[in-house]
Length: 437
Length: 181
Image 1: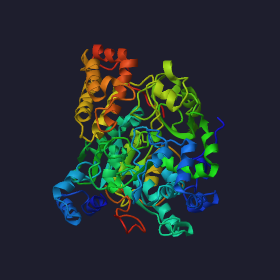
Image 2: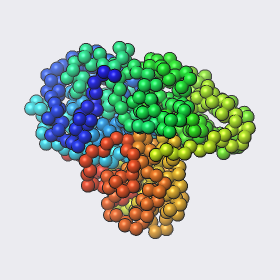
Image 3: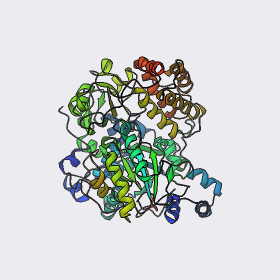
Image 4: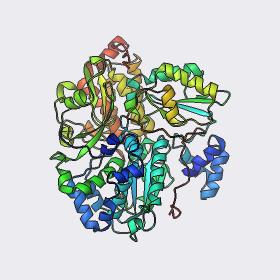
């Protein structure tokens, strides 16, 4: 792997003080905003578009294109989405805690490019320490006039407010996040008619970008669009942070280039499976993504397109690894329970469907399953995500409902026998995994 | 939403009176405030203990024994999840993903995180909270006492922590942000 580290370089080189403004400036920080202030909006948008930078929140949409859609009316707002809550994902926590200034510099660049004078950072409520770190960084940046009135000696004003969430996964969805920022229930808004780029926060044009996306911007400007676009895979540029968890020897966040294989990621980067057990399945892009299994997917390349063709997604980059001792019913139940708990309740297919799926899975797990249960779950799933197509054909306002269907697709495609064994035996056929510390 | 945290900080939980007060400040009806408060799991509308122990049992923590940690906490404290003890000291809950999957299983006390918790260390944690009754709980201190594997290197320690069952972060805006729309 020859791709250089981008967003995690500083925290790896300077583990004791990568979060301080002194270290940040000593390692080339805050050099790019003055350049951005000297460029036009069009130049900045084109640069980001040309770099191929894609959103790292989960959807993987072109950041430059997103910026170009911003409607002309002002004021416009910027919201940094730090509501990281997708099970398996913990990359933004590291970026917020260990290199908050990198995100702030990216925020300034994004703000300047989109003529924003007030930016918000929406951090999930369960992240008080990252929020404290970010606030301390903001205070330091204000003190040096990198934020506030007349930043970097120009007449450009940029205020930043940190907003703490209160425990709702759905607020990671951009329109739910906007409602939450406005002090409302975090329910996603129906789009169309209004997309955030046209009418978002306080019904004004709004850019919503993920922490990792924002954090890449100082490097993008420094390197130039062309050099940045040469990182990673030609069809999927840049590096990305992957959060690996579950039954691997070395769980953690790793910044990797697109294009390596799953085998390399799981067995080399993450050090293989604990206790040398067999790999059973893994989730390639957060709990929302349909699962992969070694017999089919292990030697496939990690890029957006290959993943999509195989019927899943890279999403937030969270990889959850399950070894041979994992009961797939139990794993599926846990994931569906998450979505049932986090469903905002607006759309009937999601509110009812996730709850019923959870109950049927629990019935199977406790040995009360019936032979018809898999078909029953597929039928319920079809009501949430028509035809179980990939990408999902939506019956709901946001993708939360269809996400809950992903484990059911895995049960259908790869683990039908194990489901039937649960029914026939009236219990789980596997002994519970012994935890290898 | 910051006002709801402020109301919680006043009383330790979000009471009807607290929500009515917030409604008066922002000039909406108490029902509207209640509608918002009930949407978010971190606004506790029931009496909550001085220490809120949140144990993650989502997928990654479950794979590495999060359920056993929860059972150990319930057993040691005598408080089933979702409930508070009679003294008002401990509340135990199981929660969905805390963003600490690399250091699974994870537990939070008043939203201050501990990663790599084993059932035995979880019992120690409960005994420590009931015995020492620390005025401030801090993630770095608890990680050192009761934690194990972490998602990533946390870097230097900080002294700030939580004094109640709500996140230890200033609830009202930031420096220089006086012009909120």
